[in-house]
Image (cartoon, rainbow, N blue to C red):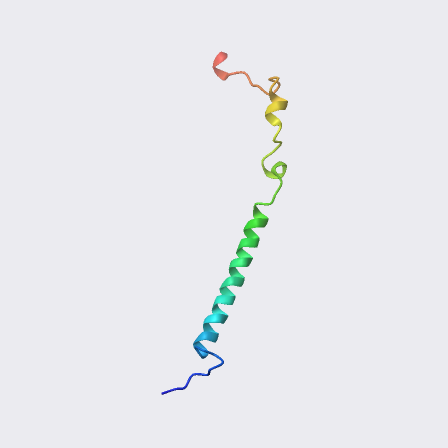
Length: 69
């Protein structure tokens, strides 16, 4: 029977498991950071002016209906 090292309760399996968990944790942190950056753009950058409806309320951008010919 193999004797376990008392400093390492689970021996080599514990070290392998710990390394694997640290790698997975690192990858997950990187993925979270990428996702945060993807959603950190200002609203004007991608979607346009948030005050557009207020500016267009006077009807200057309205187009005539094509059925009215």
